[in-house]
Image (cartoon, rainbow, N blue to C red; front, top):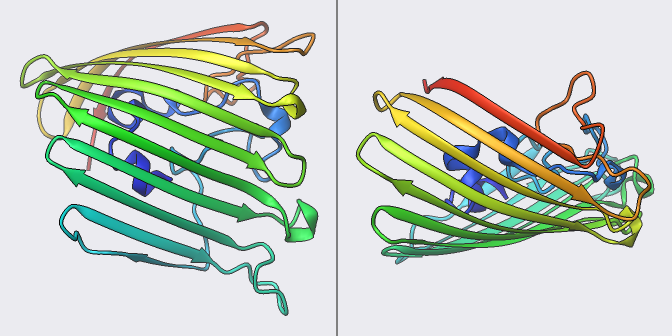
Length: 248
């Protein structure tokens, strides 16, 4: 999901939103094992979780088409698939247009004795209009043990105002199924960036999330707000940041 869709430039969170613009929301009941909130980066687009004991193949570029596959061995004697991970992805790029799709399924010992897990798939597209890169993204996440499922629909745009200034804006709609009490959230993110050099960028960022659903109390929860309890006390949550980022 990260290498194919995020690095493939189908999500504004990678270009300007940062970790807070990746997905979370009022979905702790999704129950992702070994996850600090149960739903932190639930569609794996932030690349926050490594896959151990794995092998991966990435193809060369074939007339704009690339693909890859990964398998993580579960390490359970006598069971090839128990606690394992499998992932596939493909991209096609032709001039300003690009499209990509990815699939990941991670099985956890806490779910179905290692035979169930969290399954993700997604598809994205982008088009570069010159100074504006427009992006569309859809992801689907399912707990195969409980049946909890989340659909995400996202649109983003990054506008290069000048050589140094970039303005980003995106909107995400996240919808859980009845297992998640039909919880949902809408999130808007905007960020203005200034590049001092190829390595150093200053930015101002603002984000707003509004949650809803059938639960008596549905709490908004922006991704990355973890300690001591990053969830809002009600249906709305706002984040604002001023920062400086340096890449090494």
